[in-house]
Length: 180
Length: 409
Image (cartoon, rainbow over all chains, first blue to last red):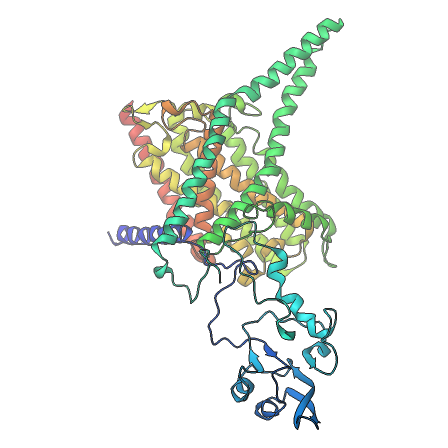
């Protein structure tokens, strides 16, 4: 009899397995159709750093706070206003460890260096890691290295909504946010 | 952020799937089903016309020839009538894997709560298989240095060819739709499908690779062993039908039990179900699919006998696999599910070939479902299961069927 019991128990187990897979067959897929659909990020998400040269007071607090030494800047003293004028500001994204210390230490209001929710960073060359902002010269044009990843940032917008799903596409941050 | 159903903000837990999402998902299936109804209507409207059309073309060409003042020799039409069904089978065997592979990818993905291919062909990756086929056509054909070039070349051919030949006596809906009418159709199919084992062994030996040899040996051992319970499971069917002709077996299942249940062999109490289950299990083993895919066990043998194959040769092994899967399902539909018979005579406005393919694809779904449910068996357990479980029960089933047969007569 134990033979038949074994057969029955085993068969029931196999049928149960089939039932589970059938249940999952009719469960909605959890796939997010990136880059057409994106998950909502936490408000505290630390994405790429953004910098605003017009707000910056060149105090170099961020340079000192940075644990990986990826920020550097140069400023000249303005004799008329007795303040420092920013010459250039560089962030090496190859070194940056996205710790938010520079944003926390930044004394200006609003913060002149801060994290964004941008995570779609690609660099095709090691020198592209170093992003430079300048104030003494006109803002870089779209073809210059500073814009190289804002091209990628708008990938979702360029491709348009996914034709295979009805879900509305979620464009990422607006283009050119690093140089406004 | 997105307002669509995919704006997920946290880790996804199946038990926390909102009821609304489930309902929406279920509704999409219902809508898809409703959208498929016009196809059923179209097929029902066409009915047997495609076949009549061929006859009409013959008749018309005869008339045209008569008008032009000469007679078309009868053998021309004979040759055409012989060649056309085979063209149909060959085209079917080229098209069926394209659909089956896509279906398998989608079902596998959804069982694993993924989406599968979504891009190629716009509608849920419908053309993914064609893209894959083009890729395989363009791939380099690699032959290992130490390989036996002749064996390596001919193995996929010998695996694929019987798979095509096996479709010759299959009645695609009605008895008349079989490309050839064989009185021993069942024996022919089972016999010829066994020939592929030679190709698998050749592929295993000719590749000059340890993985290939082991895979080929396993495949041969497994296919030869499971052939036995498979055939013996079909003996009750043959006993009841009193014929080995596939069309005859299909016709023997006409009619209803008590005016409700169709007289299909799967509905014969106890014996029919045991025979069907044994047939199904050993067919899955025959096609080397997952609970029994020891021949290509990835974790042990990389991919068994087709480890050293690439490009179109590799694709031919897969075409053979899917052709055999289709064949097993077609045989299952003919032998156990009444072939082209409707589930109730009131539904007979849907033509027989539509019913036939419906049943075949239902069985194909079972094959895929089983594949993505169970883990692989151990090699000794596989043989034990075949010889110590399936075979005795198949024999008991034959005895039972004989007993019932005696009691009746």
